[in-house]
Structure formats: structure tokens, C-alpha cells
Length: 114
Length: 107
Image 1 (cartoon, each protein chain N blue to C red):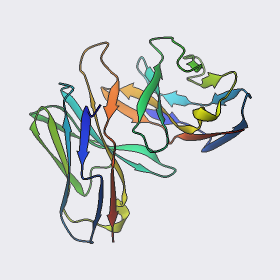
Image 2 (image 1 turned 90 degrees about the vertical axis):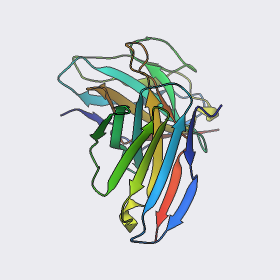
Image 3 (image 1 turned 180 degrees about the vertical axis):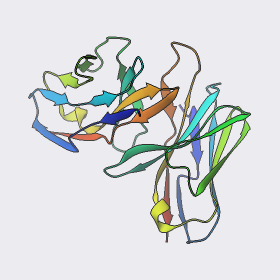
């Protein structure tokens, strides 16, 4: 089941290039998140959005921007990619109800900046 | 500030041995804690949450507010338990993750 879909799955780009990672979901969730995963550092929150008009910075937002085009779509952009942004990026969604707090993750986008 | 600490990067055990993956948190509010698991080549998925007080795949975790811990336990590890395990805390509607522990279960 592909409730949360990320594109592309893998990407190699050059330093200084602008790149966009896309995420779409069919779970009907309001909340969407972007994380990056690095060995030994776990998952760190880049940006999150609680609805289409709400965008919030996470702990490591510098060098990134996001766009919430619709409830189902949340894109992450690297304005000018640098090698230390090489990582595995995950999109996640969750509901907003009291008992609806489980996060559902995409399959990840492996980004390499050379 | 909210923080989740998983002190072990790697835990290696033999099949049938007990397993305990440690998780400690810091949060001033009422915590909501989770364990997520990532099997090889699969996406992260929820394993269990403290609110449910359930056992999933033989794993249990009890929230200890006095020790601010939420350790994950299984009495008899299986080879298919080998995976990356993340403890997570919901704080101010955000999900904060620990650095993860890789569990390797050898035959």
C-alpha cells in the first residue's frame, strides 16, 4: 500500500543545484513532515505543516524550504544543494485527532550531492 | 527542550536471548511515546505506543515517568527482529526521534 509516496527514490545532484523532493499522501491527513536520516543522528525534523496554510521550521531548516501545495502534497526544496545535505529524506503524515497520532512514512528519497 | 536518548547504537544478541533497547526522554509535559521500527529496505513503521499498553510481535514497553524511560523489551529475540529501532516522543504536536538502535539477532 502506497499511502505516502515520495519522488524521486534516488537522486544525484551537483553542488549548487536546486532540487525538489516531492511527497504525496492518500491518507487524508492534515499533518505532514519532512525528516532527514543520517547514520548516528537518527531522524531530524526539517519542516512540518499542520494544514495548507501552516508551515513551521523544524530543528534543521537552514538550507531548505517547503511548499504545501494541497492537503495531500508537501514538497521539500534545497535551494542550493551542498554535499552535507547528502542523506536519506523521509516524508511523514499524521492525523490531528486525539487518538490519531501514528505517523506514516514514505519509502524515503536517497539524495547524494556531489 | 524535548529530547529522546537512545544510548546504544548497536545491540547484538543471539536468537532466544532477552532484548532490552533503552530509551530515555526529557519533556516537561505529559509524554506520548512510541517505538518505530525500520526493517531492511522497508519504510519506518509504528511498532507500539505507550498509550495502547499492548504487545506487538512479542515486544512490550512500559512508560516509567519517575525514570523518564520507555525501554523496549522482548523475552526471546528472533532473527526477524533484526532492524533499526527508534524511540519517539510526541511533543507540542511534533514527533521527536532518538538516534536509533540497530538490533542484530544472530542464529
